[in-house]
Length: 294
Image 1: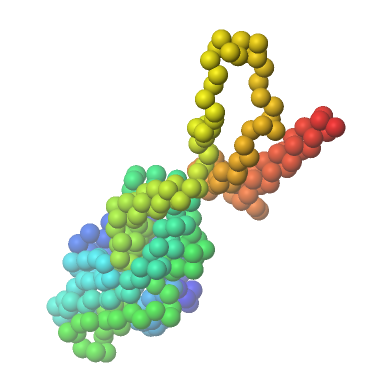
Image 2: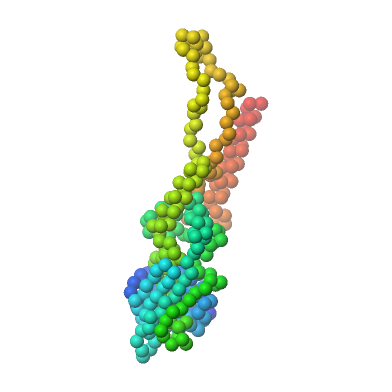
């Protein structure tokens, strides 16, 4: 979103978020929408597609209550927008939905940490959701290079500014309900939770475990009768008699991954620092054990 919008026009009243619902006046200050990670990125993209002048007009229309009957679904947002002195005209903004390959990459990334499923099931948005999608080379919010369409029976000269008015109300909706962007891009929250669970099950079936299961040797020779081995009862076989085993696959730093991203702010991610500490402690412990053996 371009920052050229005159912030002196920002309505400083009403910091309580409200759902867009059936429409109405824009309640949140524009600066609050612009600073929100998802809503601000949405406004940036819409400004690129509709232009600064259209967004200025759309802001005024949204603040004046000239946007009604808002709908948000998979791949579209729609509302009735009126200009001064005339009735409302329906305008629909079509948004590209993510393809299956993009969703697979995003789900695979979210399946690495339990925090995503936990937050989704509570109806909450993980704080780093936008960054997670970007790390998977996927845009959660429509990018500037994606095609955004406008359908309306209003005069062609007013199509962009009417669409911009809808964009402002949708931005307010995203502040209150950021997960609505998932539905807009083609997947509901329940569907995503189910896909994350399926991905985790697939990982377990492929042999990657957080903690490898105990694998007792099931091909050991049958023990001798007690009467024939009484003299060897307290003796155990030497380690070199045990069959060699391939180390089991496991997920490194599984506990830290399950804890998810730390809410504490800092120059470096806390989980990454802890991983380094754990690795160094492990190496020091192994060195001490090897020294004792020598």
